[in-house]
Amino acid sequence: MVDNPLMTTRLTRQGFDIYPGFLDRPAQEALVDRLRSVLAVAPLVTPVTRRGPMSVRMSAAGRFGWISDARGYRYEERHPSGVAWPPIPDEVLAIWRAVSGCARLPECCLINWYGEGARMGLHRDEDEGDFSCPVVSVSLGDEGLFRMGNPERGGRTESVWLKSGDVVVMGGAARLAYHGVDRIRYGSSTLLPNGGRINLTLRVVT
Image (cartoon, rainbow, N blue to C red):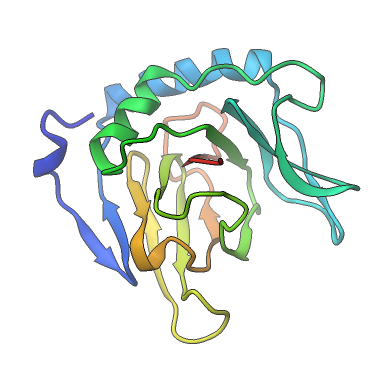
């Protein structure tokens, strides 16, 4: 993490606050190592929606994880295997404390893995109970083209390439704005030995 998070560059696009390079390379590597221990307990799974399998693979840490299967999508307190989700790593909580401006701690750290060709369609995070708390997103690995929209579908959107170590805060007017990842530049980062992008999404659920 940067030595003084409050002094790092902050860009605002469509109400989204973007902190480029918030995590330096050693911090990224340490975080990936911690995530490996999380995924050893709660392995990545491929969620299924009414349209079929998603192109990303998912897991989570914290009290809740996000599940999508034939029954629909929802928060659950256990991994599909039946085990409880591992705790959110301290390194991740430190990012939340530095940028969220929220007194509550996240109850879910969603872990999305994007392989070659993976994407995430425009959506908004609206299944949580406290919209006064922001959503915080952390990018690790390959660059992803992040699209930012509006609280309603349609209208002007803006896109930015998120690089490894970038952090995005979706609060205020952007809390319920549509957003997604159109594509990744597979192989653009050397952080993950086999390529790909990890996105962490921190949310207060209740």
